[in-house]
Image 1 (tube, one colour):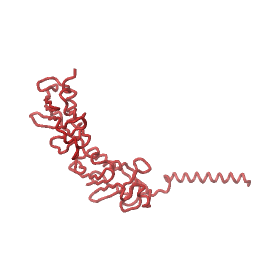
Image 2 (image 1 turned 180 degrees about the vertical axis):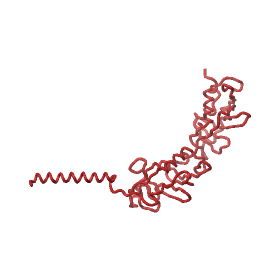
Image 3 (image 1 turned 180 degrees about the horizontal axis):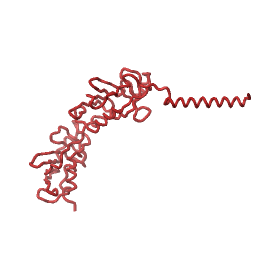
Image 4 (image 1 turned 135 degrees about the vertical axis):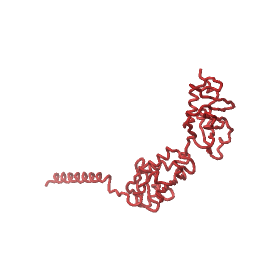
Length: 305
């Protein structure tokens, strides 16, 4: 065999070996993966809104506790945003624990999964507690590093659960201030910046109390806010300066017979205002444009020329 023929044979064998190696690599999904087993593999089994009696999270969003309350949930004792809690439980049900990615505890801090730098979630499921540590984002979007508190092994979580754990208390709380059946509203008493006026529902249209026509679009906006569109931007906390401003306006909605359906009060100011709803202990932070919708100024109620 000539040297040239021998060289060609060796090259061909190398090509075959490399091709076989690549085929084996891809057929195993990228290498010798080790699937999760035991407690962490079944962590999310049976997890759903009806099986959970408590959720406690500690991480970038602070300490958050979700507890059932009647047909809904509370967050740290406050009313919760229904959409947020629905999306959270959907995420829990869809979460999947992937393969082992590290077994050496020396990697924990780099992966954000050390005891003192990891986020933590605890679930009370069917009367038993389950706790999981969560680290930084994994190699792909919507993945995170996870491990059990007493274990060194780190696995990849296929889920965007970390985005929920990063939310702070205000992100979880319900910001919808009020929602009433506005078909029952027959009268609106409005006070704003020293002006007071009354609007009444007629057979075909709303008018001022003396029968003078009104801006129908503006009245429609008031009713829409009362029906559920009155959404606060945040909440007024103790010591917040806007909470010290005097009252700047109010709107009271009445049903037939004089029953009060809703009463909304707002503070005075040029930007965000405080706002309250009678019967609700929360003081909300309301942007100026929403204050102008729910407690409009007199000039905006007059029909446009």
